[in-house]
Image: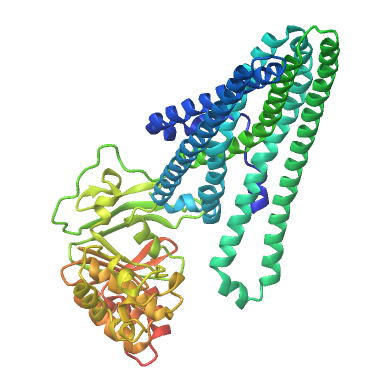
Length: 593
């Protein structure tokens, strides 16, 4: 599915109530939240008291008692100080709360996504996940750290201001209230449209991030095929759609703001005109009118601010929906509630019993079709066959990256779904076909196999994998930074680092997926000797296209179109003159088969 269709198919946000999804993250900080609310109430209350002090000062000019006038000015100064302290305290508490909650959300999202099976990443781009962790949580930070507290403060000022307006002048307040329905209607009507546009805008931003991430992670392939222009065009198209969506959202919000502010202040002008006539008729004092004006401006400002904040809350509601959706995504591969323990020490007996499997992205084609395979503890079994025959799928199912549609896979007699994945994966060392090198030092890349390994053990593993010489030749030796995805190393060097990582893990089960495919002849000979030594006493599954690397295996299993078509030793399979013999004749040209 293309980025555009994926975005268009997503449901739109329907309610600001989606922000309730943040409650589990706020709950642990109830104390901090309570203090922030107290500071909020304090600042709102002081703000509402300030116009009373202004009225006293203005009406005090007509009072002959100068001492009383001084007291009014002093009281106004104290109120201003309380307002300043309360505002600073509110900012500190609310901002700290927002940063803490967003950090927890980001960690929860990362923890959740990191444990998802590969099937999850077949449905969503990694860049889009990163967009949710960064862009969406930044929106939520703005809401928790600012918008919500400002909204609550304006609600308090709105409600308190209306009460004090009524106490100041019931007549003028009645005129003000006539304006309220005219202000609320555009907020409700345009707010619905703004909510939908906000969610759409966030989706396009995520699609843009996903498109960029995919292109940048494959930049050498893009450049090699001179695909820069087309890739730029694809990214520009998604980015432009994001801008168009944002422009529609901004336009809607701007129209709503214009309508609300104009109606609000037009009403205030009308009310002031009536109030000015009452002052001339001595029906109210100048101080009372100014007090009313200040309250009216505060109420109008609160309404205007709420209309703007409402848009922010809608955007955050859309972001929250997306985050909650990600946190609540059900993985197709899950651990049992009461997992069985894998017996220790692990013997390494592996059994596939009539296993049929189809990849989620290709449900119409069987990667494995009724495969039964039994591997004895300590046996070295090579899996060979044409590309797409199902060899690597065997390793992926054994790691339980996926679950088969039918059949059963067991380790030491226990079915994999009955155990916790972390439990049985600790007994497995994997060298993947595309070795992963992290953006850290060579030493830490190898130590990834066993985090508590000493430097001496790391170097011993590197020597066994024929990696010691080229690692010591790097500028800082084992402490050299290897760059993102190991750009400092050649393909063969990456494989040797990955093999050293597996050697260091020292697991009872070893899985090698084309582990020597990128090595030169000399390095392959050295690594093959190391692997053969490592495989002693371990259950080893070797996937290989180069048959020279599997001639000494205890057993060779030949796959074709998702089924086992033959198995036996090298000599036996060559004598049968089947698929294996044909593959051997293609590879061995010196008569050594």
